[in-house]
Length: 111
Length: 119
Image 1: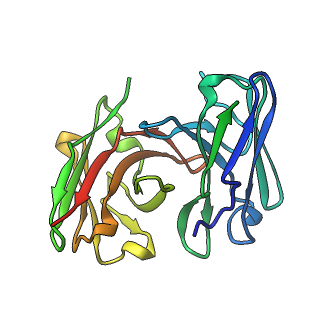
Image 2: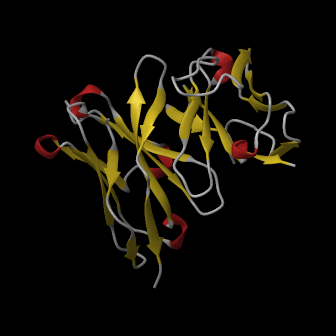
């Protein structure tokens, strides 16, 4: 069972906006540790999409945005495209476990 | 462009050990910690541990304590992950990842190494 909770799946039509939540506890996201988001295309390694809660690495389209409030974080994808079909994972650090932790992952489907 | 090149797929018997390598191209091997993350088929990402390539210091997830060993060879810019006493539950893709120290995330990943444990 993952330390960070994500919805198993979200879907949307091309061009729509979807959002993925990531909820932690007082020992990880609620303790102020940053949340980061990764995109994993089928058969590929994860790739960082958002780091430091809301920062985009160079090359990541501005359709992707992140936010964090308290123990919860969100990844939003606006103008959904077919190429966005992938699994998305949030990640943070847990001070009680002294470990890096991931969310359970969310599969995004473009209808 | 820096890349992390991992070793090829492995098939091991239960009870055996596996050692996966991760070679960093470019001259950045000593600049960042290296972490290992695994993913069983159809499952999520699971963090295993980290290693500082300069000092050799390591840290392991509690679940893998006593079974995983992270090492490195500075001259070849290669990090290694060895997992012992394998069971079928260890069948997974194992990734090495470079750690970004300002925000504590993984900014570069290897392509992964498939380890299959089967008799």
